[in-house]
Length: 188
Image (cartoon, rainbow, N blue to C red; front, top):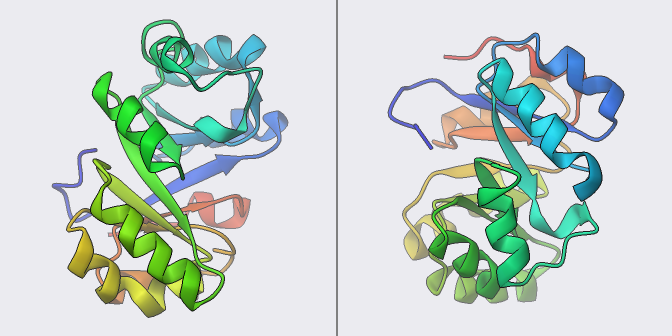
């Protein structure tokens, strides 16, 4: 991911396909196809690439995809996605090994999930991390950085500009959000 610029990235999370056409009119570099099926994945990826958008998918939410070696290779060679989100370190490392960019999704619910996530991150080959829910990402960003020094995104309940402002203040590089009101927010 090209994080070299100081631009904060907002990645629209498309939960309803009818919202894709709107997302494609915006300036965002990436689009997250959150709920997709292998039957229409290629056509939506092509649609995004046609307008110079990079496509992110959550490997665990692609209907009909078996996340084995064959399925992972299909993500790269047949479907031509640009980045894959995954919470499983084993699967994520397999995805990374085929040359796709990866974002490790960690979900924090309590102190045990934080401890488990930190242990998992130590073995991950991820390029980026997404912490959910966003409020806990803000709270534990320093602990996460001590384990893995890669760009961090927030996801889950990113619904207000104030969350984006708070993320910027602690050095978070971007957010994934299904809140359409934030998709077109201008960021520096």
